[in-house]
Length: 575
Ligand code: ARG
Image (cartoon, rainbow, N blue to C red; front, side, top):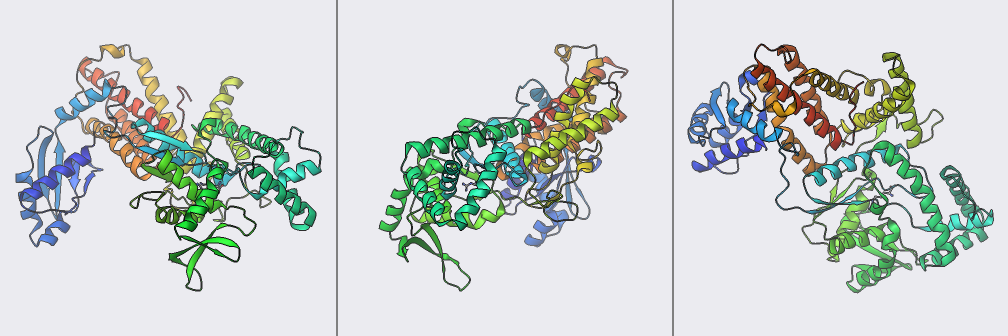
């Protein structure tokens, strides 16, 4: 249920009744609910637009609002607000539905969409590094949420498994007689660097590499088998990382660049036939009027090189076509570094020109900022290298072990290691997910492992506290049959916050912004803690009150757990 949307709609309708349309009322959930649970925030603006006094307008809105059982009272306050109080009995009825629902009362969408989410997408023969963290975990939250809402989510791990580098690698491994050797990913990456150097300095090696690229593209058995091995060595390591990160990507989600290889010659032919692409200096290029290069001329996007090789852009044009025409995507969401925005816009524009996707198809590129160190420079190792994701996650666990050892010296060793894995990695994930994805953020171990503030340990701990209260209760859950009573301010506050959950989830499904959910969970946890301070739960005087408060606590715990689960963060029973 989306209370904010319901109220907004009612206000809109009350304005339509008096002939006012398109004035976009802004309704917010009040921080201090004594002033009204919800508030219309832009009454003054609307009144100014209509040239009437806010008070006069408020009278008309209030008089025209549908008298529903959901409203307790709607009042005006100076200088220009409308305060909306929701009826406590009505809230209680809603909570009842949520309490007995396995989905916390959240409905499936009425018309499920096919949604492709392009995320993580690391490159073969290289270890995943810090640059892949954001794409991987933010993309996964969106995937989980859209899944939960009932959409048909197609996770697409667009791995970089194609291109000239594979010719180099095959030639290098053969040269060093390593092609049948069981290399680790670290060794493979070293070979990759050496192969690249050799390619730039050794003519005959470069020749051989190019020959192998062509062979690989034509399906040559020998080249293909080495290539397959490189992919599997890399992805095996990556699945380890996905597992550690509790990310839902599986082997079946891999749809790398190589998938589109077969389509590329036809795409080139078609773009030439449609006069979208032209030949210039031996290469095939699409000149885009909509983008200008530095000298003010239409920007050229090369789609086939002089040596007949295809490019990253060619693949993405084919990829748009495939996702739209074969996978019937209604939405395609990209979680890719913002530096690739230009590339995506260009390939999307070409795909549209060629009618591979419909003219109104949106490009949803959910960009994200950089991860910085405390000196505001890109976060790197001490010697200035990129931080490998596996090393980062190991450090997270180590730091959490240290933390837990100090906090709980009596816990058996086995327990604190398994606990530390959850706490450490959740902290890294949460620190990232809780920042607005479009901005840079500073990576700070102390902050993310803090038990206070908007952090994973704080929320996880809040959850364990509720669980321990519930454990102490002697009333079984199936005996909690009476309705929730909402009398005290802190009870109402908590109840309204619980009702807000669906609205938060739906908004992330539209914008791919997990930080909204983090903020919500943080607020929910603090509101619960206030409720716990003000209201005795287990020792309330009346059994009715006790039961009601237990139900509120259960609902809070379930919401926290579900919310964390959507972030791909595990809860623990004790910490
Ligand atoms: N492999 C690329 C990289 O590591 C990201 C791929 C993004 N997806 C796409 N369809 N281009 O930068």
